[in-house]
Amino acid sequence: MMISTRGRYALRVMLDLAMDGTGTYVPLDSIARREGISEKYLESIIVCLSRAGLVKALRGKGGGYRLTRKPEEYPIGEILRLTEKSLAPVTCLEEGMDCPQAESCPTLPLWQGLDRVIEEYLMGRTLADLLPPEKQ
Amino acid sequence: MMISTRGRYALRVMLDLAMDGTGTYVPLDSIARREGISEKYLESIIVCLSRAGLVKALRGKGGGYRLTRKPEEYPIGEILRLTEKSLAPVTCLEEGMDCPQAESCPTLPLWQGLDRVIEEYLMGRTLADLLPPEKQ
DNA sequence: CTTCAACCTTGTGCTATAGTAGGTTTATCG
DNA sequence: CGATAAACCTACTATAGCACAAGGTTGAAG
Image (tube, rainbow over all chains, first blue to last red):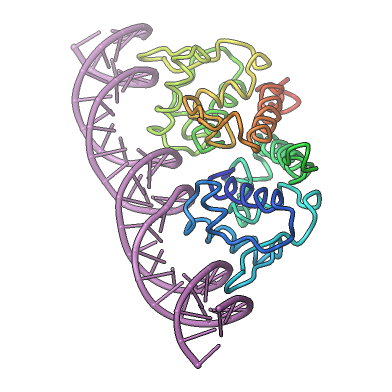
């Protein structure tokens, strides 16, 4: 629940790719070195992003990853949702968790409201918002 | 990070006490039965609330717990902060975590913003907001 | 002086997180 | 063609936090 290293690393990888800007393929080991993150661990993270089409992968020599859209077309929430199992602040709201007492629960509306606030914040910002001004 | 059963149970206990309304001491085992939660586990939770003065405890026969303020004087965030180790959405923001790269981290402002939004939401609502209309 | 309730300490099973390790496939370059 | 470089895939592991459970101790009322 909420944001672990997986989501944070995913964001940093995407940001790293966005900083590159050249549209060429960037190999993962160079990203790992720059960001100071275990390459093997990053692998398991970027696979999610690749399968979902947020980045395009190219194998073999000269291969790597690159963005498939412009930075301003990546809502932060989308990146996090793919790499975290859930962004819900409480387990009650997680998928496949329909609580039998949901109808009468006096606290459920509170959590739903919190979830909405978080969702709006994360979907209302994009990768581009995290780039340094000169890279805009 | 974020809200586990500890915080959720704490809220339900406080709500249970607020529902009582009579100002008399309510024993924990009756709360546990009503809420369907393990009494022993609740014990470890309510101790935090008691030590912080959110509830007053009375030992011995006829003892139990009662609120020390009116429901509208308990911000939800205060209850959760006491029972959860942290409400921060990422570890970066947890106490005693001053990251050496904080200055140059491009994602830190994002997390700080998210933290503020959550904080405002949770501190802007009180126990009273969760009571059914007729109990107001 | 018994009863009931809070208080305190300790232990335990489970699950998720944050990685490691090692091998397989695929593309490029000399 | 073959070496190299990269993504891809499977499986394993150590650690920590969560959600309790068990048992005994202290203290207030009747």
